[in-house]
Length: 69
Image (cartoon, rainbow, N blue to C red; front, side, top):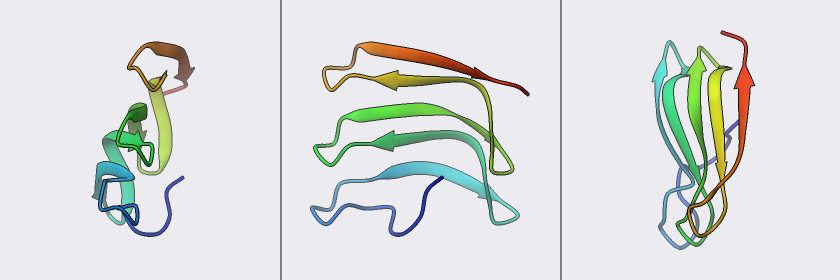
């Protein structure tokens, strides 16, 4: 899902999360270039699991998507 640098050219984070065995694992957050939170949820070794939340720029929840665990 993520590739490249964890930071935008402006120095703000593109994403934050942990890795296990070189794969995305645990809770992750993905951000827009302006620094606002875009999406958050969990990975199990690169596989999206549980509820992922998508946010509007003002922080409102736009959508929740459930992935099989």
